[in-house]
Image (cartoon, rainbow, N blue to C red; front, side):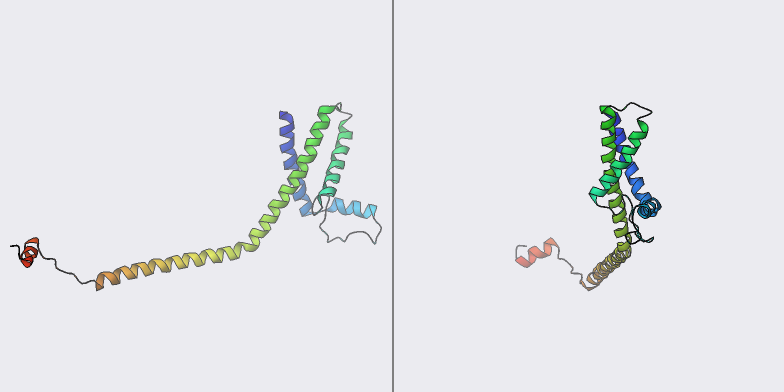
Amino acid sequence: MTIEIILFIAAILFGVVMYWRESRGNKIYLFFNKLMNSEELQMKDTDTKGFVYQQNLILRLVYIAVFFLILILILQFIIPINYTAISLFISMIFGTLIGTYIAGAIFKSSEIIEEQADAIEDTFNDVIEKGKDILEDFQAKETVIEKEAPKVTEKSARDRLKDKGLL
């Protein structure tokens, strides 16, 4: 069970790296596209779609499963394939699939943050300026109140008692 968890986490990281790599360039996908499709159906060189980058769930799953099936066929000559090995490969397939979606969420959120960075900075600066204005207003009001308040001399207790007629 421990090896499955380790491979699952490693597969998630592999999926993140795979997604990031395809977001930077899709030369392998373009090669297979030109190999498989006629000239009318081939994608342009400027298209960024890849095996996992900008693909829907089903096609991502198919491409990742085919990749791991080819890997399992190669490894069949090195290690014997049994239920445990198949379970590990299934765990790696779904870990990679999850990793690609995690990477997509990270890239999308970083794009949104970059777009909104200027607006957030302007809003933050406005809030700081309004806070400074409020503090200046409070300081100005305190000094005005101190200057305007007349000092009333209080009578002593003896004088108050005399005014009431008790002394």
